Image (cartoon, rainbow, N blue to C red; front, top):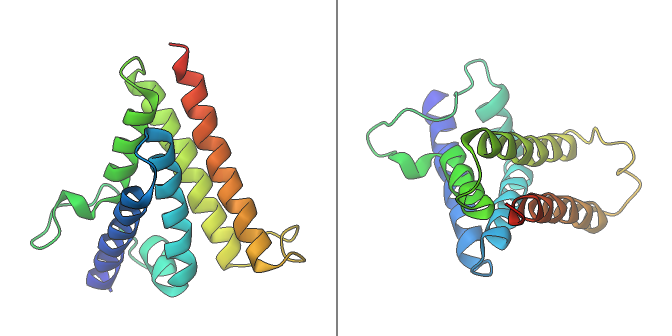
Length: 152
């Protein structure tokens, strides 16, 4: 199970990297793309997502380096890099950590709520509308983070 969860994190990282590659070449767009890729991965792989985060032996992030799974197999590292780029050099380590927590919490929470169909207020809506709401929430967070630090 551990090996399967580790492979899941590697696949999640790859999905996030693909999202960044397809995004507009600016930090805010890349940050949004990683969040949307995270949610899409969770929805496409709900059992694997559950195993990765809620299994009997969930992995802790950042992942330890293991043969065949270097630092690129670390979605937390990718998010951290995107946040640093979006916030810019004036952001303190505390600012970066706060933004990472906000971003990860949003996409992880949305993923979990959608997979478990636990967001009752979203259930009457069509799946396409639920996904649009998710995308908008991620875009709003990325825009807010960028705007907050553009004045520094």
